[in-house]
Structures are given as C-alpha cells and as structure tokens.
Image (cartoon, rainbow, N blue to C red):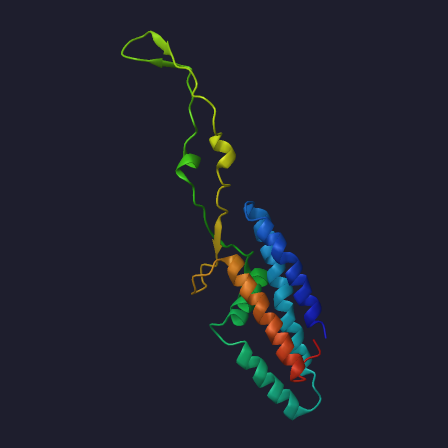
Length: 181
C-alpha cells in the first residue's frame, strides 16, 4: 500500500534532522516529523494486514506483524514515542552538550603586562606561523538520547537503525505476500 512512500518520507527527514543537530529546536521538529512518518509505515501495514479477506491469511499475517513489533525492540519503541508525541506531549530528547576547554573561556588578550608595579611593559605579539583558530575542529554537536531507551545509542544512530528495520520489515512483508509495500 503506502509503506514504501512513508519510509521515503522518513528518509527525507532523517538527513535534515542530522543537519540541524546544532539547533536543538529544529532538531526536535525534524525528529518529530521523522517519528510520525516512520511510524506510519507500521500503521499502514497493520491496516493492510487487517483488511485481508481470508481469515487464516489475516491471522498468520498478524502473527508475523506481532513477532516483528515486539516490546523492547526498536519498532515497538518508536511506536510508543509516536503515541506520546502525538497524544501527550512533544518529543523531548535528552541533550548532552560537550564543551572543549577552549570553548568554556573567552580568550583574553592584552597589549600590556604589568610586572610587579604600575608601569606596563609592552609585549610584542608572537610571530604568526600557524593560526590556531583555523585548525580547530568545530565543536561537537549535542548528543541527543531518548531517556527511556534502554540502549546506549544516541538518537541519530537509533533512527538510522529504525530506518533499516523498517526497510527489512517492508521487504519481508512484501516477499511473504502480507503487504503490498
């Protein structure tokens, strides 16, 4: 049915979410859109399974679905996140921001140095060989985690795994004839 289309929609939001890691609000917006689109894959699959006219095929297909969407698994977890996000409160990932020591203090420069007294001594600037600022890597992006996810994965990693599991779910469901994809 529409599973592949919704997977494509989730894949559309994933790189946008990654690109917005430095902007917590925009990251959150893209995460919310990602969760809704990705969860729709399973929603459409469930509706398609339940619409099977042959009762025994419907039961077998439903058992397969239930085996794939088990408590503790990624597919089940994101279903709960979508329900919370839609019905209770906006998605609010835990955020850890790591600052490097040079990001914590503002560099202070002085043209004068007072040595044991009120008279300033001129200090010439050091010769410019290498500009330190040019070679500093950018600060690390914040680390986003779901506080209720038992694993160690951060949100971008977990979302990537989720996309992979959804893709496998669709392929398997189509190959078994349970969903049209």
